[in-house]
Image 1 (tube, rainbow over the protein chains, first blue to last red):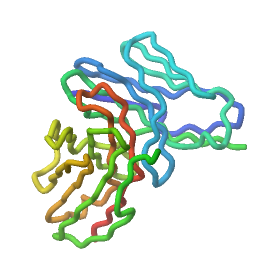
Image 2: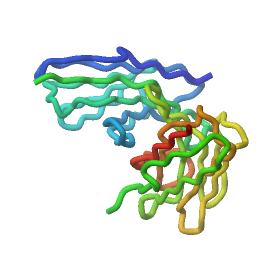
Image 3: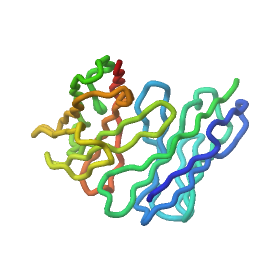
Image 4: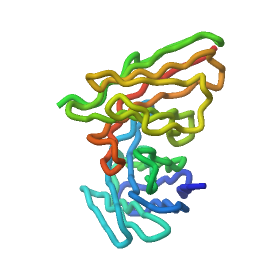
Length: 111
Length: 114
């Protein structure tokens, strides 16, 4: 069974304190790994798609990386507005558009 | 361009009732997927529709059904509501149905079953 595990469950950072969020996965065949940001009571907002090990993508203070077993979302010099839940999801081969999500990591950035 | 839209925003129903949720995809997107998200969990896949045909179904009972219309909008129907159906229901659209495109989510419908 395809599994996605995110850690830690929650992370509290001081503004400017860089850190990384982890997403480990066990799947039959990875077709893509996705990162989303979700604010309370809202739908997930698309951030990145990674397709193969070694791939990296950046957007403002966020950088996503992918290995054969896990992905990291690096947050450099975070600001309070980066506070949200970050969701990781995988799409496996032969599974059409189905995304399998982890539980998410709740990030709080204090000013 | 408008994003994915969903209606209603909030809904309160009683156990045993039926509910219909609606979704309009991003213009040009032909695939719609539905997800259920309970508090503290990630979204769980319910259905995918592409070109009005069901392309995928998650582990949900037959009380859950959906359909897609010629304009690519979609409805999710849940019969015989249970307390455990209380959740945020999310609709996501993507350009194609082959599973290689990003999915963009709507704001969701918050369903409360009492």
